[in-house]
Picture (tube, helix red, strand yellow):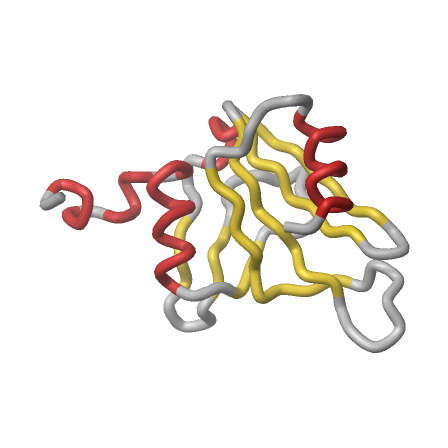
Length: 118
């Protein structure tokens, strides 16, 4: 995360230090000419913060308690944040390894026996 992204995270989530910050492969139009800006998913305290910064800023915050049905779609390679309806973006392309790290916090039950064996 660069300094501008960290500043937006502090403004959105307060001074809470993120437990986990993952850059998704998903990009949005945030005002760059030649490419899309990546979305970051950050877990801070009891909230999930989704943000992107370029010329325009995008930040959303939702309680972790509203993300209890989140899962990884193996067919599309996307982490799906569910059943949250107030998020503008709720599907994020990312590697399975990164999605598992997020699901361990958002919805451990979706991982099934994997966590029980550790």
